[in-house]
Length: 168
Image 1: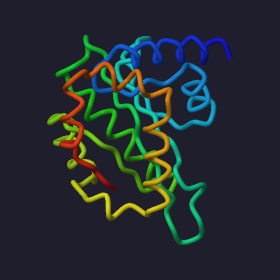
Image 2: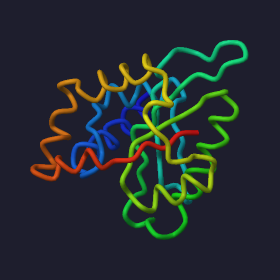
Image 3: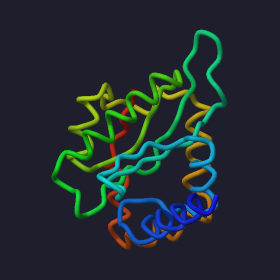
């Protein structure tokens, strides 16, 4: 449990500082780690990349895939530009397939958009996501805990309307 808490604190700290990432408390991240709602790529003993998600409509039902929203895809600075984003998407792709989940995320990062398409995501429209899933995502994004994330942007927050949704 201590290892999970240490990792959760590290990721929480990153989410607080990095522009482009919503803030998550260490408790939220520890819960995602405990519930196995994450993907990670390591290099030796070091974490190179991680991502985590939230199930937005409960477990998949018979014959239907559930929906997950990816909240964080992060490559540590010393590993950027070395193919770790592709490796992270490979792990994510397999995890989604194994769990029978459809997924979506918002981004405006060109490298993420390009890599996501290689792994079965496509630029989509919010109208393709079930209404109840969108409402839960909106509720999550507007939670007061996230406000510090939006304050990091300053006036750049106005560019948030330019973010694209990618769906798999």
